[in-house]
Length: 96
Image (cartoon, rainbow, N blue to C red):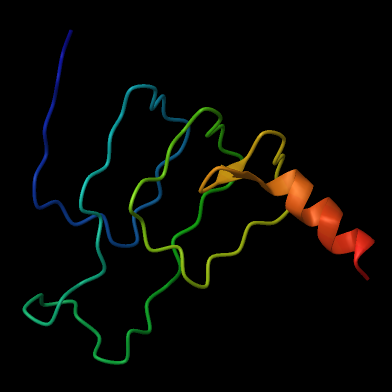
């Protein structure tokens, strides 16, 4: 088994196409901080996007998902903090 660790990499504005990521882990993925050359004090950065990705059975743990948007995605079985999102959406629709 090959394990490759890359620390302190800057993937800003990178486009990665057709990649196999099973077993891949991302740790401490952050926006630039004040000591970084590409820091923007306004916090105005190009959004991070995933298109046509199979993230099934993936996990997001202790992540900042504020102002994140999910659209045109299969959410069957998607849970946030143990709550099945399909059920929450269905209940919200029934309460209208």
